[in-house]
Image (cartoon, rainbow over all chains, first blue to last red; front, side):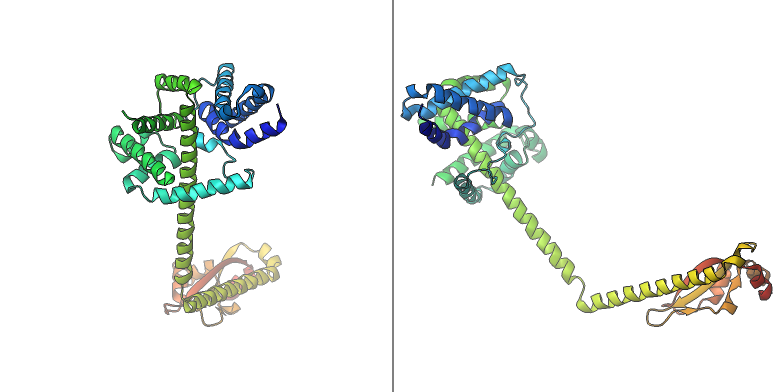
Length: 167
Length: 192
């Protein structure tokens, strides 16, 4: 496999693949290992992959690597304490490439605007779930609301955020 | 259910997966779907991205709020004392410190000079009394005014407190410094 193609594929897909692996494995180190294994496999077998479907192929390989790690280690017991989106510790760090970091910061600025479009009720639930890391059940108890109400607020808030960001 | 609803449903499922809000059965079913369904994989990535960006934005927002609050707090603290008050307070502190230092030095000096005699004494306590107000120099009682505590009682005082009360000036803004030191026997004899 041409190293330049691997490099390009890495630049295009590694960050998202890492997110994907983190959501499955919920551990930064093992996710990083699985990511490296995925691209190692890509280097060995990537010649047979059509460029158009590289991303889908990488997702499939990454999934297999993640499941292998899960089976090997005792990671079946999920870590409920960890917030998956915080595991990617370098997300907004200086270690992130300058270009990628700038894009994410711009995203964040747009998200801040989008958050302004939410009602106070929605924003409260979003903050408690995403920033404070509370479970929906805990939020319902905290706000003295039915669980269904909390779920509805969160779901509609996420939908609104996506719509705002797609504008 | 149309395509838009299906996508919305998938996004919601993906967010619940990322947020670890699915039960074991739902989770296993969704993971099976991830194996072949690229749209589901993309939905997971999208949910992670959105959560990361929202978390970051809220964190920044809260930091800004914190900074603003700190700034307001600093402002309140800095304006709570007018310059005149601050100067007056500063002068008062300096004066009080100077007076205290002078008294301490005087007591130490006196104690050093009289130490040999004090060692041979019967450990009679002496009350050295000084008073001052914030605008004037400290006035120490002269050595002749030093009163041996035991002798106070024999002189008709019921207690040291009574003696102090009698020696105090009545003015409200005057305050009293009291130090208990040893004194040689000869002093008590001379007091008699």
